[in-house]
Length: 539
Ligand code: DQQ
Image 1 (cartoon, rainbow, N blue to C red):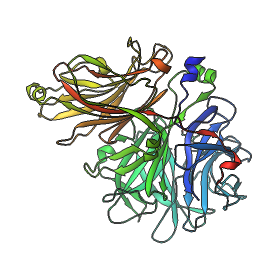
Image 2: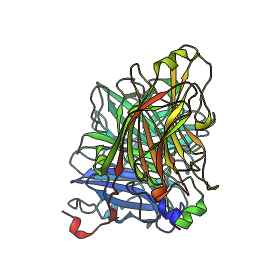
Image 3: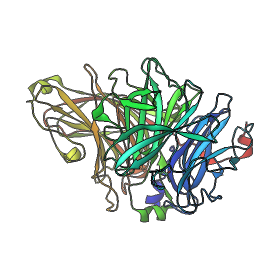
Image 4: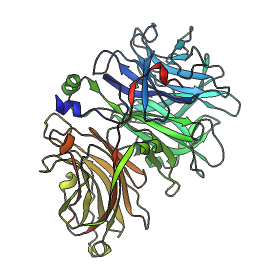
């Protein structure tokens, strides 16, 4: 079926077939980026989970390798679940992961490369005395999973965190170890937040308040803040909080209690879950991987024989301008796929207009755009107590004085299918402008069995900043970044008409008052090599 095969992505990581979920144990080792992932070798739905494995020189082109770990022990018989890598100062690689035992008890296990001199790390040994950790007293045996990368204390011990819950309170437990074989529980928790439910895939890492580069996971001290991320099993979104980590007591304290762990900021306001960062010592950056699931039907997934893609890895840094959010940006290597480009300068979009952008095909794109609302319209517009909400305000069809405006991606000529990625600006009662950044799936497809919600959230816009966005379009995925990555929205889109040569790009302005001036650069994107490894590629 050409509609379904069109949905396969060209430069996002995917296995050749079947189901994929969480990213696992990412690391850089002897010249290769390693990527592991939750994988069902037997079908396009979740189940029979083992670890898939791939390697890359640049995080974009990938070689698939044999499965790294399969469910062959009593302690991971029901699933080789999510885990993280730690690289010790002597270069040794430690992998900790959750096993679902033959009785579905969640335990933590240790694995390591059988041949550390192999840059491809093909063979893995499971520690003979696994499991190294059982659920502690007071914790349900089904609520103890996803060990983090370890970080060092000033005493030279390693700490890890493991997500859990008690009743409806999400908690992150902390353990200490010297050898990754025996662990001791650190009293208390890294953080606990009532009402949010189980914390999956906890991630905990430092960010610099001064430097643009990323920090090794053990960095601690002056000019360092910490980020804690949890994946909320209850609502399937990834939330992060910026705060301070107190080594004594292993305590994480949010800067802003309103944005506590699991209730405040999200990495991404679309489809984006079970993410995990790693420190890339090669380029001194912190890189974020995330699982982007499907939002079509399970029936469609089974028919096409695969489900899920990985987001393009993103660098993560603290936003030094606001101090209160992260900046996420596609790794620079994705730009190596840029082919020919079209530039559009100072296009004027009048209120209520749609402007076709002549760029040939529009299925694999990297778009950079800037928008300016005419000053007069801003001045003339009355203050309002309207609260625009991407999710509930009627999407891009809802017209206000100063928005919505933006781009229609994966659109066909008759506009029977299109996905608006847009800004919506409101002049509040205090006279200040408040900006939302949204992705509207409601008219993205004529198919009826796909999700049609509108995603998005507010985006901080500082004085004298233009509105700016970046969009990566790759067949059935649209990743959007506003204001340099302050707010991001990832969508899965399943058009039936706006495919192959019929996929187009438009500029639109659905505001009633404001004229918008837009400048864009649009690159056609090459496909990445994502294929089985062949021995001649070793060098
Ligand atoms: N996926 C894994 C678990 C994790 C969940 C199982 C998050 O370890 O909690 O496939 O998506």
